[in-house]
Every structure is written in C-alpha cells, then in structure tokens.
Image (cartoon, rainbow, N blue to C red; front, top):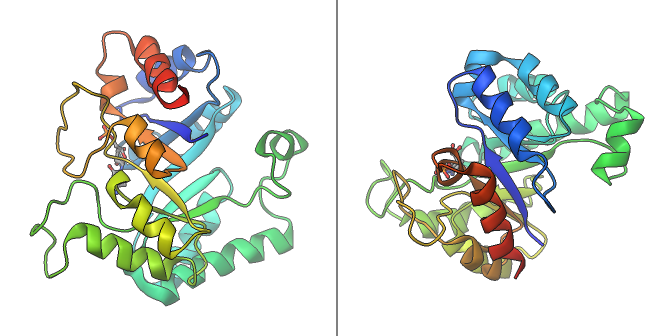
Length: 247
Ligand code: C5P
C-alpha cells in the first residue's frame, strides 16, 4: 500500500505540532509528515525532533540544488533528522552522486541517527534517509518551464530515467507520470504531490490526480497538504483519504 505523507505547510511551530498531535492517532495511519521550506526556515531542526518524539517519520523536503560540495554538506546535516530528503534531479549527475556518497560515508562512519528505537520503527537495516529527486514540479503546466522545450511530464520521465543510475532511491513526480517512470525504471520509487480528492480545488498545482488514481497508477508515497490543512475536519479528511486508497 502507498504511504500517505501529510505536508505540514504551516507558518509556525505551535500550529504544526497541534495538527501533528491530532492526526497521529488516525486509525491505520503510519504517521509521516513533510516539513518543507516555510516551516523549516521558521523552526529549524528542533521541530523535527519534536515531531520525531510524537512518532512521526520525517520527509524533509528542502529540495537541495547547488554545487556538489554544498549539497553533500547539506545532506550530511539533514541525514541526522530525516527519514527521507529531496534534491533536484536538475542538479545533475555529479550533484546527485555526491549526495549518495555522503550518505554512504555517514553510514560507514556510523554517524547516522541510529538509535535502537529508530532501527526498529524504520524496518530497514540502517536508517540512512531515502534520497528522492524532484523531477518537474507538479505546479508546472506545459510551456511553463523556463528554457525547457519538453513538456513537464516528458521532462519528468527523462530525469527519472537518470535518477536510478545517479544513486537516488526515488523521484518526486506527478501521478500522471508514474506508469511511464515505472515502466522505464522498475526499481525506482515514486512520490507524488499534486494529489486532490474529488471535489477539492487544485490550487497552484497543475498536474493533479485523486489519491485513488495515483495509487492505481503505482505511486509509492502520496504527499498531501492543503486538502487536509484547510479542511474543517482534518482528522476526518485524512481518514477519508486513507479509506479511499485502501478500498
Ligand atoms: O498543498 P498541496 O497538497 O498542494 O501540497 C503539496 C506538497 O508537496 C507541498 O508541500 C509542496 O511543497 C510539495 N511538492 C510539490 N511538488 C513537488 C515537490 C514537492 O507540490 N514537485
């Protein structure tokens, strides 16, 4: 079954922790949250520790994009807190490989956050964070990517084909691209934003799918923010989405 990640795209710590506290008891949900640019810039790593204490796995979505040395340094810092982190595939082969090498070095040094509790909850032999590459942002429609002649979907499929060889565990892509990506790179995991249950506004997202459609297409992770954050009943909305993808 796909893993559902709630994007805590909120402007401050108290609101984020209050929502995390409410959601974590939803039946049948493994609590996974995304902390992104806004919340991390406001709160820093202390918030990640608090979320971790609440039992959350952390998708730290800072979308690194810089020279290989700088990204490797950022990965070193993020690896201590995150279960999953992102960089831009557009950073290219040397940048992606530098990130992977850093994770391997940390694992080798034993300097990842390897507590017994984490090892148990991760279900993995080590707790090296999963490394995901952003392909084409789900907010891009055709013709909107500066300097790129391909459609966003074609560009996402093109970058995903490189990602595995460059050492990434998965890619961030639209649900509409999952089937083509999996056909070309069967071992690559797909994490899909741009998820909108029936009847919810697309907001700034352009390449959208319902939770059920994305799961049927083969998505491994769904990341959902505003449909849950702006609901009058976030707990009920999350439960409804879980039911939709499980039934
Ligand atoms: O509110 P909404 O459900 O659109 O949130 C989607 C989340 O996924 C946001 O936190 C956004 O930063 C993230 N994301 C995205 N597109 C990507 C990568 C991440 O929308 N390509």
